[in-house]
Image 1 (cartoon, one colour):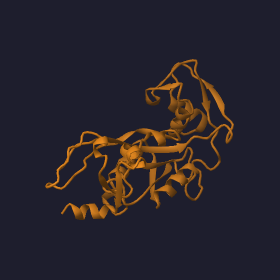
Image 2: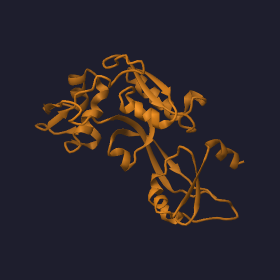
Image 3: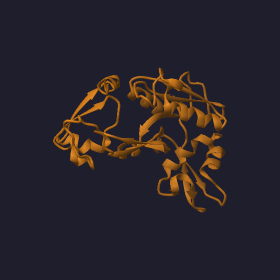
Image 4: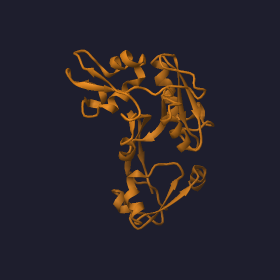
Length: 240
């Protein structure tokens, strides 16, 4: 029995912000005709750094970075020397090749064994190729290590990540790469009715390892949901 439940917005998670304690900031006064991408090119020589500027000026940037007001004073974070380096620390700012990191065991979105290494990988590579870059995607496990290397500046971004409130407090996200609907399913002889996460309270829920659970984290932490994790391959076996 399949029941529609939640919509997940999955996006490209970009570099963590550099705090004022970590870098010296510059100020740019917005002029008519300025965009975050044009400002990024002016200060960094790289159009892809517009998100870093946007994230540093959340109260002055609107409509997902598409609207800035003339006269606004924007902080321009100074990049650390390691930011924008390849895994071999070859500078990529202004160069054609850029490096991304993802992980395995997240079917059908990301896995080296999948066709085009997964749907999310194919989308990211196609988009940045279209923009004129030579994107390189490397796979690092565990996922937390890939995220740590992105924060350290060894990659320009990592993907795919659900844009949860917790992650948004520390990282900048692109617009949604893709939306997906999540469906809980139960045995036909033990049907359940689910309209929201609260309806799962008091139940044991099985979810594949690596899949996000932010939509029911409060219930999990309070003990109202008993969450079990299994490898994704077992999910396909259980469906047979």
